[in-house]
Length: 140
Image 1: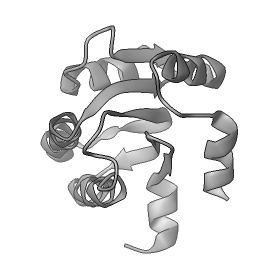
Image 2: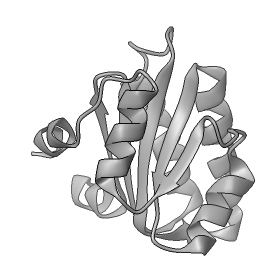
Image 3: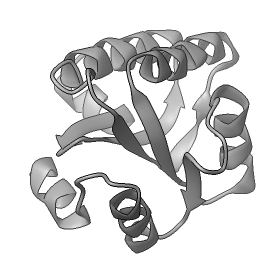
Image 4: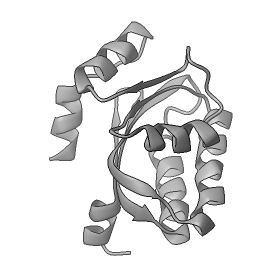
């Protein structure tokens, strides 16, 4: 997959002990497999301690029906490798429902918001090293 296609569909960055994920468009099975592989590589150095993710799905539509099972694999792998908390930035209730169906996190460990400031504060309050400014810098 070309870099341009990857950037149109997703971007992954590590900021401290937080995986930052930006999702766009509709994900196919091959995209889900690539995201899982890239996630595994990116968090390899921090997976032996608790880590969090901030997942921005405001520009994401959903996985294709065929890709939905693979989407569950990403969540299962992350949970099995010490991801303990997640903030989901979403625009629509349907997006929240899709994530809620595959995520095993409870309300104490999963936070849904439309606000980047609230996402940052929630992560910091839960002991994670994160700033939105550093995320922006990582994207450059």
